[in-house]
Image (cartoon, rainbow, N blue to C red; front, side):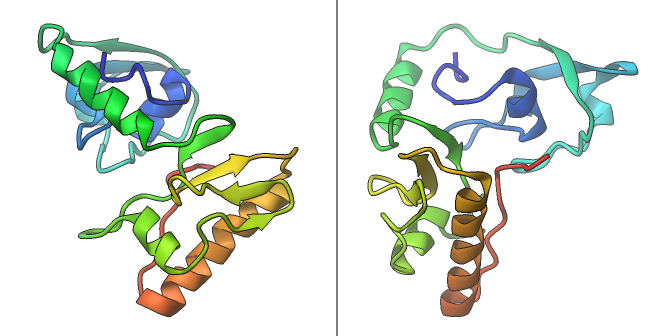
Length: 165
């Protein structure tokens, strides 16, 4: 249930060790099926928004660690209410220790800033929105601009949560 409102595919969520509200998918993962076969969770180096998996993921096995919790649905709905709707790939940058990427991007005055058909969301600055047929160059231009500005102004190196293959 904790994956119900996270955008993306299961393979991408595993690769990024996704999870809302401080949780991580790896907490309930038992094994993944890669091209070479099943790999147990203990053999994978999971950390915050990373898995170390550099190959396609074809399946996964999870443990059910708790009963359905109706309060989780309310928490997820509240979180999604603060995130933009429409074409986006979710959070663009990993939150740096002790801060939030969205806050830094907003403080760098990039909230709502656009390049071509892509822009930083006016609702949540850590989301890039495709509002008008954005190109790869539009999106990477915004990513690079945010990384440069935040590093210059705050001395913080933003790391992308989005993986470009």
